[in-house]
Picture (spheres, rainbow, N blue to C red):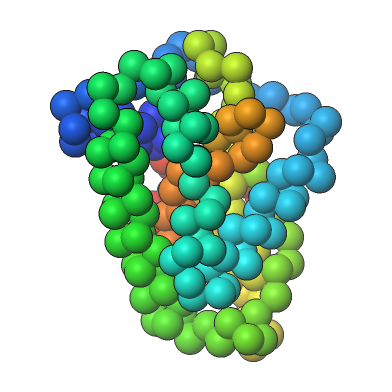
Length: 180
């Protein structure tokens, strides 16, 4: 889970402000919200499949959720959120480039399944998620790899998606331990 912590710190540090989710991240095996997690992963898939940044951006924290996440300690949340949105737009464009390079035809691509781990940081009441979505495109296996999200107000919001690549994840692989 180091990547999520770094992501949050780096984004806010770009504006001279930081927040950190600290302490031991405990992996939990709580399936109480498994339907919510499945729906979130399907939303991520549909947003990327749509090729529309607006759909992808709808998965980010709202202005009010962003204030909750930062514990209102950020001096200029609008400016930080704007920086985050620009960064996510570049990420989205990179995902579309990955899909094109992988020869993905979205109109015939289907959600197969997902692998995910849930973590609880010591100093935050929500859950952190990290996972991957297996998809099928033209009878080829592909992976939307490195999805990271955080729970805010009982809703999962997208932090980052690493890349799209060929293959199929049969078991969970931690983002930090995977080499491209």
